[in-house]
Amino acid sequence: MPLTFLASVFECLSQIFFGMRPLMNIEDIDVPLPEQESAWSAVTQSDWESAIGERSGGQASKNSLKRVLYGIDSMQQVLPEVDGFIRLLLTVTLFVEENMELLRTKSWLAEGISNPSSLARSRSSTQPTLERDTPFRLQNRIKAMDADFNLLQPNFTIYPFVSDLSIMEACMYHEVHIMRHVRLEGLYALTGWQASKTYIDIAERDFKLWLHDHQPTIRKCLWHAATLLSTLHSRRHMTLWEPLCFLTRAIFLWAYLKHADSKTVQPSSSEHMIENQKALRLDRLTKADERNAWIDHGFNGNVHVTGIGNLNPGEHPNRVLEELHRYLISQTGTANLAGGIAKAAMQVCRGLPPSF
Image 1 (cartoon, one colour):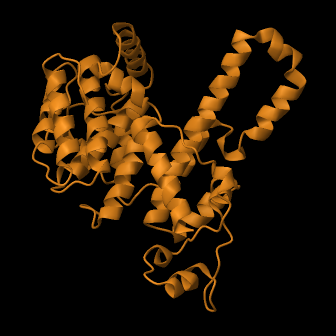
Image 2 (cartoon, one colour):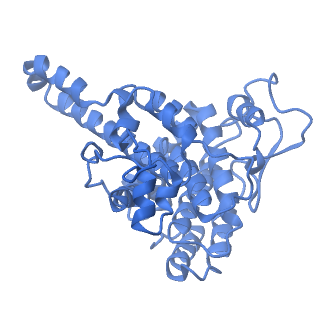
Image 3 (spheres, one colour):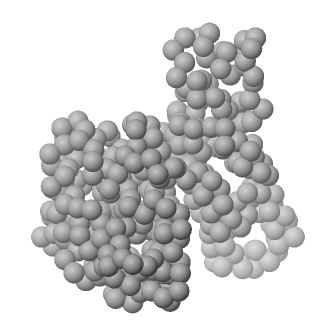
């Protein structure tokens, strides 16, 4: 049973970092979800059986992964009692399920646009089928998912995080929040990686349009990127997934500095803004009220990120990639991957297409 969930996490991470569509269907993983953290740290079969309720004294879980994701209020009931790997599993699975649902909806709409007569002929059967196949918790798309993702928010007052698992949980939380709004393929295209001139132009156009239409979302993504980079910045021996997190968030900040302007995240009003500060350390906003003030209203002053400096649109975007290179080139545990990413970052700085 643990391998079932580990395989699911692996497929979700492949989707997040490489855009590979998962082969497993979440509705097929209808087995009890071990909600006790002791189940994941069990070293013997008897410990495992006791943790999941197969031995006397153990209490079996009534929830499966499918039920937690799709059932009404199941997420709210389960999350206060779980931690560690379960929260990581729910975070990455929720992101992939949302992404796949959006792809299915876009495909259905594209089919209707390209062949409206066919859609009209089958309207009576297509619409009920679409509604039936769309899981209840995903029907309202991104807006409805915010509540569940907010429930998965780590405790940001614990800094630095105390274990590799808590670091991974926090980093993946930040990672998926940005990728819910900015496609991975689009970010890579902005650097010129395996993209034609036409596709680069389209990616730049779409990113600039996004920058001018969603200011609170942009400020929220900037906070996620800054916090993620700050968390990884203290790591001396990265594991395999960490250079990939560092890469995507650095590209996001680089793209923001390159394509944004002074109006992109300008304060919406002086009311409710963070007061009595000349500079805002974006990666140190651990208090919810300060974080919400930044997201909702912005900040009238310098916005600073550790290791990068002030985030002033148009000013030296390559310094983000230079910092990425400086940090990754010294890694030893993932030397080949980190070194390759570091060299590709410098290619972008020189105006060359990267070869990741």
